[in-house]
Image (cartoon, rainbow, N blue to C red; front, side, top):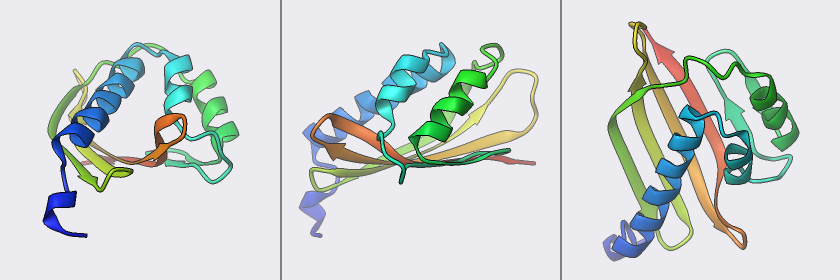
Length: 127
């Protein structure tokens, strides 16, 4: 991959919009949008601070059971990088009010026929 294939402005804008759409849905607990933005496949993975979810069905069950309060957070050090027209990585740190731990989130996005979708996500907490 050559440098001109990395962070093409139009592709970067698409992924950035999808990432922040996900973030708004997460804060608002919009399960429908969160479900839409994950690849609907058994190979989709979401590894979290307290859960290891393999496949869209496990991810859906986690979202359905998750409390809808206390989801507000502030992002920092967000880096979104695109590679070519169909692949991107989004990394960010986040903080929640009243919580001292800093969270990290990384998502792998792929352009599928249905649009940009998360195919792998990892969330962790730092002390």
